[in-house]
Length: 521
View 1 (cartoon, rainbow, N blue to C red):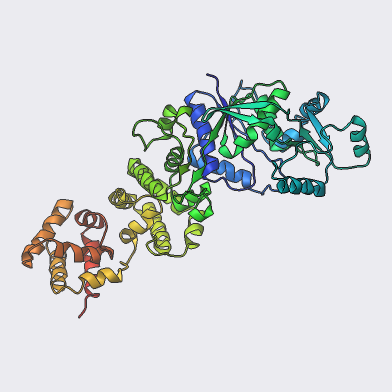
View 2 (view 1 turned 180 degrees about the horizontal axis):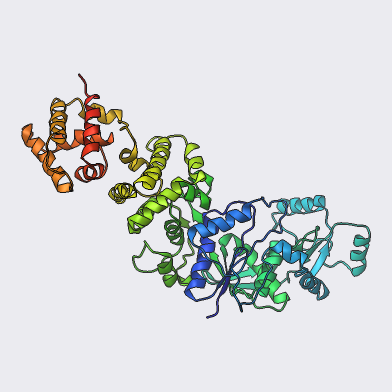
């Protein structure tokens, strides 16, 4: 099967999760069938265009690993046909659209309309008052004579070109997800194709471009289903075959409402700023509304492409679950080699957007501490430049526990900061125990004396068990817990013997000596 698909965003805002899922499905489908994925910028709505959005779109796609073979930023391939330009404003200036809308006018499938804004508002008010379908169903101009059109143009009235939807017909849509959908053409309004300023609307430009660029499948959100009868009518009027339409289900938050900013970060690049790896985010987004079959969940981009099938797309809405994203991100963290992971952490730590993201977030109840995350990330990156092997060992110990790149800042902070920051609750819980002073002093006497080399996890475990015996403690816990607080400032973390081995004998001794000063007298 020859496949050509397109991701066609408007530069009116940074791509959000729903946009990126559409782009991702295009990429996976094209990759699965060895086809072509097109990036087309639909910038005909000049009033809503935002400077810098095209750059955000390209950056977002690259972040999640979406590739495109045609369009802005794509490398030229010798021998491949060029369907450009790929920005609709440039296509309009090149005169690509005009022959097609003029042909529609000449053949009676479109018409000029010169209604004023006030007239359109009045029309809608009457429709609403009479509980009729709202929209433009002909008004004065659908059956206007050529002389009436000429008179309006001579008077300089601003006019639009509208598609003439046939009346008294059944318009049939074959959707790849939902199957056959039928529409009463009497309830489908006549859409504007060309605006008064001469710019084409989405309804016109996107369909013309899809035909000229030989697009075979249109992936888009289900909010476009209601527009589908207008689009298939346009294709038929121009004598073209409609591409296969694939309408994707809406994405809701866990509260069942359509995903929005109130559910947290939804812009794609916000997740990069928060520390999520692109492939993990892509994996998570792909499964919101698509099932690869079996019990597969954690997948690479290649694995997803191999499994991708339109038949796996669900017609019901998907749910954006941040807890599931964190879980999946953690699974991808553990699939990453430690060396690659450290490089990713350092790259993330050194980005200006990272500091801007976390420094702008106030600490919340049960939430990560932004100050500690930033501090840890900076120190870990700096340590990796001076002593990569040490930083690598620290990352290895936390790799099983952390769910995204940002989390390594807080998790690894105690490894790389000059002095331990003690959690007051941890100090209150363990440093007041009567045996702790004797424990720390005993350990320091061994560490600062002629102790045999401490160069393995097993030797640190043996040292602490020896301390247990020396202090006649029934269990190892009263040794482990206060020592952990002394070395890390916290009550939780990776295995104590393992982290002692990473810190090394001298650093362990230094921290125990500092902890002694924190004990109540």
